[in-house]
Image (cartoon, rainbow, N blue to C red):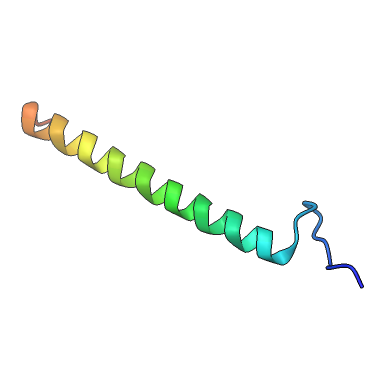
Length: 47
């Protein structure tokens, strides 16, 4: 019997793997944005 497919065409295992990488990428982007804003704040505070 074939593995069940989601509407995306990925198996459940592939979906979980994609989700893991997606979340890691989003967290990395968030940390990068925080660091960039912190450096700008140190350089020229806006409040």
